[in-house]
Length: 226
Image 1 (tube, rainbow, N blue to C red):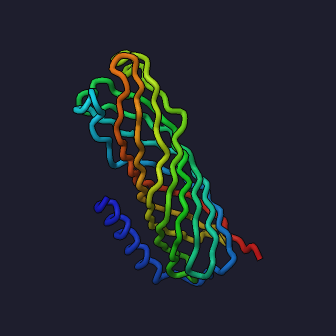
Image 2: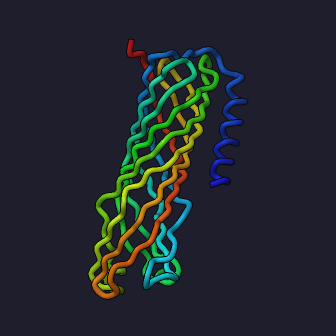
């Protein structure tokens, strides 16, 4: 996590420096920005041991690349709130004692995230920002992979919803009237309790930390609601 936050802060420092060369392009209270991004969701953590039988085995969520829709509302020139909406499907890889299985399961994540942002240089073409907020991740469509079923029998996978913090850094670059390119990096805390109900070794449980870095690139349109 420390490395992810350090990378976010470093990128933001570069954005702030670049903003000194921008020409006026003022954001105002009441503006609404709508963006479409392509995002890469890159998990940085894995589970602890699967208890009680597979204590030397872990699970890890794989990467995913998906489109994302987000909305940013400006309360003032500098202060805004952003809501991001996307859903991702992740392969859940076996690690440790079950690494030979490859993919053990899969699951869909729906992680709406709301952040409060501070936008630097609202009068310029380069408009970097920092944000922090909350994430609520809903898990659905959990399925055991055939390799896991072959190893431990018919298996039902259940993952509990997650609530955690999010931090971000990004840059809007004005390319035309009301039209912006966007680059954004987030770190989101996602941790879920996973239950495997198997036919051969009974109920197994673990806590799967996902904690992804989310890198996005997209385009947005900003307009006034009033």
